[in-house]
Image (tube, rainbow, N blue to C red; front, side, top):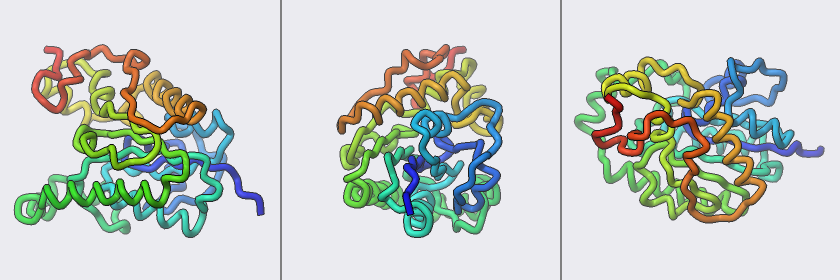
Length: 252
């Protein structure tokens, strides 16, 4: 049987392929085409369409890196062998995210839940969680390093040890580009990127396209190394966003 060329997007809500969500349930993707488009195309779909590759969407909002790791292992074993992978695009989330059993949806457990609050107050170990993500980066190098791998840091927390990763690594935190779209006080921005977030992949339509272009060019001109994202390609009315998460990222 001929394997269909596939590209996988692996991570959190920064690479959620919203057009495909009606058949991605509990992290168990099934290959189906003809999914309805979102209000505008997201960067995973733009990239897959450009190359005419099958899209393997493994972006799960609010989930930990461990959760997405498990889903990747699941589909490689059962649905999409590595032999058909043309590229793996990783979006690395914060190492402090709590792992949630895959039977629960991301809306089931939130940061306001007493159990989650108790965990972070009494049980959470920052050094361990930081170390654990570094082991995941080493595993990516060992297991997937022979493939084209492209990496984005969603937040700044993993930038200082992303040298452990193979392939092309973009060190500009995507959260800074996301916040760059928003003007207002810091409190207003915090609200916009959390409870009032409506954008796809935390980016507007133009910036989804801009990020897709970065990925397409990386695949076409693949050269392992570390790179900053050229933010001049993105709509960024808030030039103070580079200060996030430190104070000074507001415009008022």
